[in-house]
Amino acid sequence: MACVIRDKSKRNGKLRSPFWYACFTDALGRRLKKSTGLTAKSKAMEMARTWEKASEEARQLRLTEARAREVISELMQSVGGESLTVFTVADWFSHFVKQKKKSRSDSTFRRHKQTMDEFNEFLGPRAKLNIAAITSRDIAGFRDRRHALGLAPATVNLDVTILSSGFNAALRQGHISVNPCLAIERLKNKTQRKGVFSPEQVSALLGAAEGDWRGLRPVTFHYKTDTIGTPQFGLIAEEVAKVNPALVLPDKEGKPYTVRYEAVNAMLLNEFLKEHRKVDEQEKTIVELKSGMTALAATVKEQAAQIQKVSAQLEASKPAPQVVNNP
Image 1: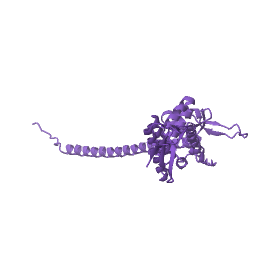
Image 2: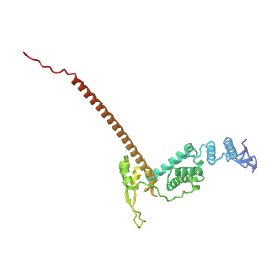
Image 3: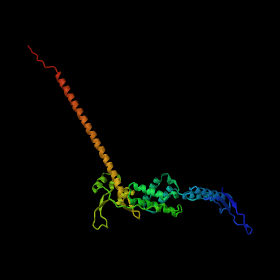
Image 4: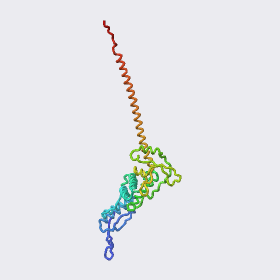
């Protein structure tokens, strides 16, 4: 059990130290005696209890970095009335993107916010943990999940880079002792050919699309480094950013740099499916109308036959004309 004592030894007739000493059992089971640096017995006792509590948690392998910070914060609160500023993951990233909004372009702010919101969503309830509780395992899990969703390696690597910038800021301000992103290897950006929409298909889809998609203009271009001048087909990054900033990647200045065509293809596919559903519904309506017209024609034909039959009966029931002889 923790306790506090005074060192009663003297030097030149005075106590060698005015401070109380904490006596407690450490994580290895040793009995220790350490100066609290406090002259108030009650506060010194709080410190002794906290040290022993931390040692007990360490002995049970429950003392993580995040928990150690909480213990220190509790100790500072009980002894000095002030505690450490402790951020949850969600709170820190919210604070970080607000600072980005002040210092970076609007597109850079939105890209950072998008990535950090998705990371919070990936963590679920764990986003409420101390930011120091996040490990490289969490980052790797987020990276692998994003890659499994079909995002290109370059996009996933950028996500990790953005998270790393947030953790670096926390590291500089002393909220964590290590950046968990530094242990994550970048995904190999394999060159692969994907099936994409043809220029004619893109033009047709954009023409039929709803909302701001109608404003996009497919263009032809060629790369400056291409000496042959091979024609390329694509969209203008600035125009795509106006429709959905998440579909472009910014440059170092935060300006739209390139279009995430793997994501655009998915969006265009969605527009294609919407148009396909409309066509299906129209075909269904046409079939129903044809069926109704057929039934109506049969009814009209039946009614015409009945009218003709009745007309014949009426004609047959008329009395024959009689001739009268006058003498």
